[in-house]
Image 1 (tube, one colour):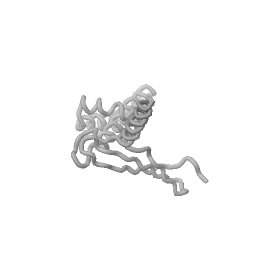
Image 2 (cartoon, rainbow, N blue to C red):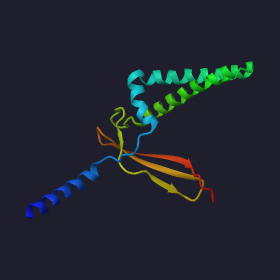
Image 3 (cartoon, helix red, strand yellow):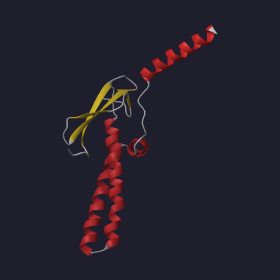
Image 4 (cartoon, rainbow, N blue to C red):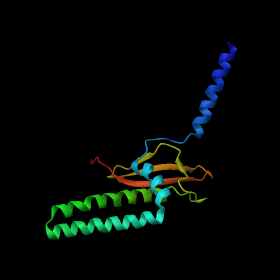
Length: 151
């Protein structure tokens, strides 16, 4: 009977110890899923090139389609703009996950739940906490967002 209480104490201690070092996990966004693949496949400079070309072709097709009054050409610009937005989000995610201390790619892991600071205005602050999985450097990211609630 004593061995059961000792083992339950050990498992409780291990559980509390492991809770302190666990990264905060949440569902991955689309950019978090696609960015490592695109960066490893094409590289960051090529991703920027694809972004610029896709955006330019999409805008050009919109303008040409509206000038010629052709719905087909006009709507053909939509996939190019979608690709441009995917490349933009993947590149932005990649650049935000480079460690500022050691310079490694995709190094930051979320360590805590995001905090939301509200000062009773339309703009709220979202504060996210990260830690480098290689060197342990801690980083805080603050973003402003517009609140849906208007008093």
